[in-house]
Length: 214
Image 1 (cartoon, one colour):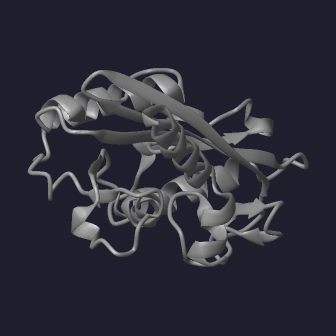
Image 2: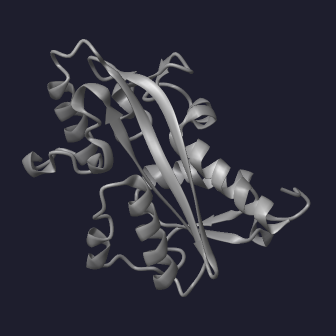
Image 3: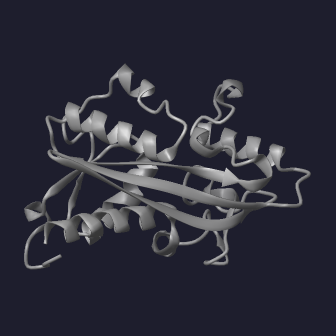
């Protein structure tokens, strides 16, 4: 990015998520790759009940494409970045996988956050498991007038036996990164961004898109 230009001069990229944690992670990644991140609210895309029925597929790739296509249409054809990601645990045959967001959400108690509930359910499911290998997987997809492009990113690690730290979101407090030798709930945002599944997918995607324009 040419730092002589203000951020307002950068081409805008709509982030197809209403998850505040994901927005915080995506904004600096998008800026690093020469784009200006725009939230759905800032883009004038109001929340709608239909959004709950977009992610209905069995793969990260299909869900990411569905979200990107949906918000591309609702934003009037603007360039949209969507991603679908989740935690895949070997001992649970890849679960929670594409269901990571609302895994066992039917037992959510009033007053308990969804993230906290999911972490607690994972720890219970893994209580007696010696094999704790897991990975975060992300597929990021870009949709614009005339095309689509996708890339996948992964990060390997293990499931801890108890919560560690309060940073991050989702399953971060129980995920130990082998590369960082630290828990995603403790490491800095900068350290996580260097190895995370979401960062890897988004960087690869936006760089590939830029190469295609040359």
